[in-house]
Length: 116
Length: 115
Image (cartoon, rainbow over all chains, first blue to last red; front, side, top):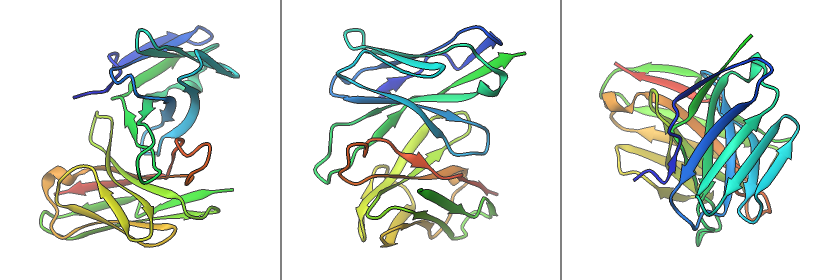
């Protein structure tokens, strides 16, 4: 049962254009969403996040949009740069567990290629 | 600042051999710790997490185990490796009961190949 889905395994865009990465989720109890960027043979690095009480969060070239009614979030990268080429994972948090921890549930990732 | 270390970086082990992967965190105390596995072309699967010394929660039944002998040390083990244990193993940490405890920060990973 995939609670977080990234239906596009890959995306190719021209340098300078906008990259839009999409993510869908099924559990309405998720209360925080994150995007991670991963290069080959490295650990994922945290990119940007958004609380379920917001619909937009912006950090430089990166903006995350959340549509709760559609259970959909997206990551916009403007302008795209060749160094942005990586695999992008979206993740959602479970509600706080009894032991005061959160679990992250990850999508399967989208490979972004930014062409020079 | 906080840093997270994993070793070894790569490992090739025969089927049936034991496994021990180590993860340590510096610059923070009482972190939540996590072990993930990424199989080829797949997403990240949570294997274990720990909220304190000696406290381990298992997410997926398998022949792997985890231990937390010290506050900032997390170990992933197996007594007998299977071919299906091959993958990229990632350790992560998050703050404990902090405002940003939902944000997890990952180590560099260990590439395990079981032959």
